[in-house]
Amino acid sequence: MWKRHRRYAADGTWDRVLTALLALADTTSDLDWVVSIDSTIVRVHQHGAGAARDSVAGL
View (tube, one colour):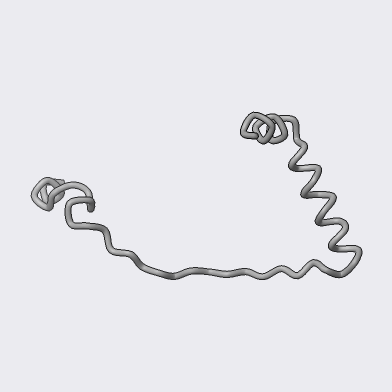
């Protein structure tokens, strides 16, 4: 299954399928674009935040 997916992605099959589906949905007025923006903020664990404060102060 993965090999077929990779082959279809490489030879452009998925692009052609998507183009055909979008064209069909557009001609039948079934195409409705919805945009969703997620503004969730997730804090990083204190040890995953990057460099220690002392090393940043030396800049």
